[in-house]
Length: 73
Image (spheres, rainbow, N blue to C red):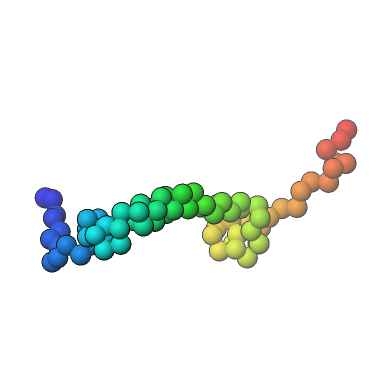
């Protein structure tokens, strides 16, 4: 089944927005919105979380890195 939405009026269409604000402003706003969407925050690395947050999401405590001289033989 396909649900269709009926609008009580045409106040929320692109044509109504262009008629109200003008094509230049609508185009500029659309382009700015498209460009600014690329600034997404980087996902967090689990190695940078505190032990409290790691425990909250089900991870064990962070282990300290091995001593450099223990890797040399």
